[in-house]
Amino acid sequence: MSAPGRSRGAGALCITCTDWALYSVAASTSMSEAAAMPKGKPPTPEQIALGDAIRAARERQDISQERLALTAGIDRSYYSAVERGEFNLTLNALLKIAAALNTPAWQLLRQAEL
Image (cartoon, rainbow, N blue to C red):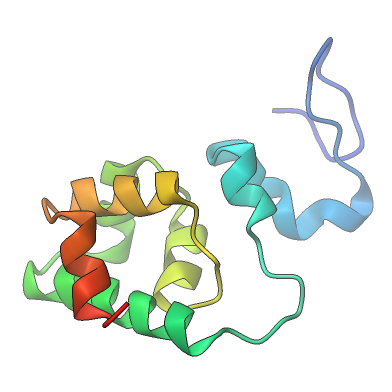
């Protein structure tokens, strides 16, 4: 992986110094997930409720955040922020997390009362 600010060839993601917060997430998640990174906005009640529902499902199964993120194929710090409600999740990210939990996405949404 190239250092921030360096190109990795045609079509490569070019990262500047101001993008350090996105660097590790962009490297291991899709660009749509990285684009969902918070920009200083406080989490909405819906984001918090969904994060709480996801955390509760993970804890019921006694799975660590690290293990779940690895199974879902997403960055651990991104997943941790999801549980804190700091992201407006993409449908793709929600489906990855639900699959890693062996739980239908609708069930997580219902538990969050969404």
